[in-house]
Image (cartoon, rainbow over all chains, first blue to last red; front, side, top):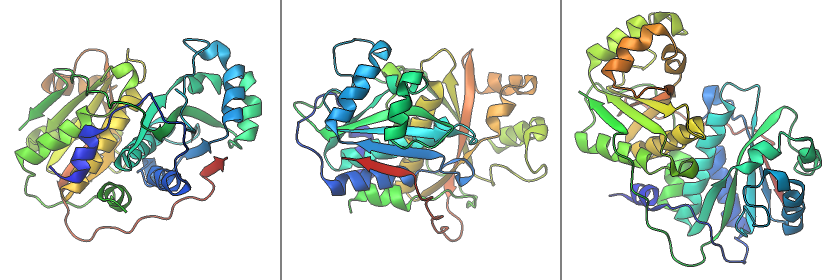
Length: 174
Length: 174
């Protein structure tokens, strides 16, 4: 099995992070990986806002309290970096484009020993009026929706086992 | 730069294929890569129908004629394998889940020297009554939408240059 396959099959979603920040170079490579995803008609309909300012994240979490499943806990699991991923609502396929980019970022991160996870509540939050100040701080272009967020950091503790794959999801017709 | 990053940055969408079929083992690894994508709440909301029966593909194309942008041309570019990717409409995030899986399949294929491309008209076709016989042949579970299709084959000819990346898609806030 080649290195790429090993990385794809070995990647896990990580929810426990060391406090120390990932390097500038690592973040740059991860974002570059996102930019090199394919997109419908090459529209590259994404916008990535990488936030490493914990006070900005904490203030966003306060404003987003009503969108959290478990208020009082950190939905970003203390990750030192959060990339908010937006997509141009007027594009052909903003959700797919952004998702392809997010998978590239997950895989790039994993290949450098950096853990990641998709955090989803941000999609709903960024549709609310309470998100307006954060749209401004993140300089989100007009008409973009938040597709999800990617948390990043060095892994703290054990890497979880892969969950079993569901049966019946593949059929081959020759 | 590591092998995973090289594979991510080097991947291109391919639209010209050799006629010979990819191997069973290669197809198996590509599908396995798809199954190992992350998904919202681990729902694995996808269904992959890989078709290598050209007469089935041709008959589908006849039934889908009105959905093609350029009737008379092959929207699958003569690829010997087409994976139709479906998502459970009742899942949390079927389009994102399927898209993450598709990017894994693109990258797995590329790492084995196999070209791929997203082909999108199938999404509209599989919402039409004309698609019913194909939903049956592909054994698509009830309540699933077609998110897209992945064409696969050995690359014929030159690998295209990367298109320039759009400016202004990344912001870092430290």
